[in-house]
Image 1 (spheres, one colour):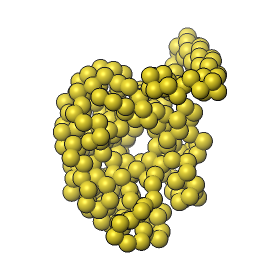
Image 2: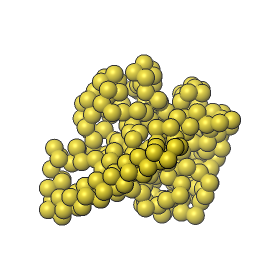
Image 3: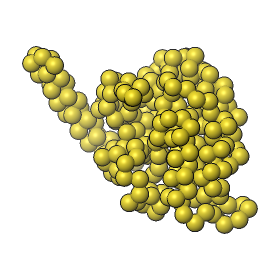
Image 4: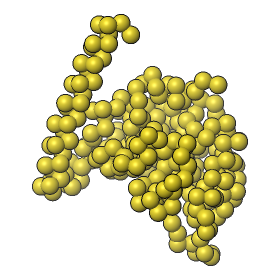
Length: 254
C-alpha cells in the first residue's frame, strides 16, 4: 500500500471509529429510554455495518419463500441456510433456498442445528445426506445454542465430545472445518475451555462478541432485522474483516 493510500485508509478507519462510538452512545441512550424496543425501530438498529463491510443473513423455512434477488440487492453478501437438525430433521425449504441464493449471486453456506438428543455421528449422517459438496460454498456451520428437552430419552452426556465428532465428520467430508455458532450462555455452560483452534460465529445483539475474542469470525448482531425479499424478521451477521478478507475466507489458499 502506497503512503497516500495508507494515509487514506487510516483516515477512513478513524472516521468509522468515531461514527461507531457516537452511534453506540446514541443506541445506549435509546436502550436506557426503552425506545429501541419498539419493533419498527429495533429492526433497523444496525451498528455492525458501521465497522464491517460484509453483511449476511441466516434463514430457514421460518422465513417462507424468499425473493433472493431482492435480498441480494439490499446489502447482503452471503447467506447461511438451515439444512438439518438433530438426526433426522431436514428443512423443507433447504433445496429451494440453496438454489435461490446461488441464482442471486450470493455466497451460500449450510448450517446444522445441533441437538443433545442424538449422537454426533447420527447428526453428521443427516447433514451429509442433505447438503451437497460445493467448493465455492462457505464452510458448514453448526448451531449449538440450546439443550433439550429430549422427548425419547435423556440427552447425551458429553456435549463437547459429540460436537467434536460432528465437526470431525463434516471436516472429512467437505474438506473445511465447520464454524461453531453459539451464544454466550451456551458457550459458558458447555463449550468453555474447548475448541481453542476453531472459528466461531457468535450471537451478540448490539455489541461485538465478548467471548472467543480471538476466534470469532462472524457476529450475529440482529435477530429481528429487516431486508427486502424477506417477509418478516431475519437474522443478520457481519463478517470480521474486509471484502478482500472475505474472499480469502470463502476461497482459502490450499
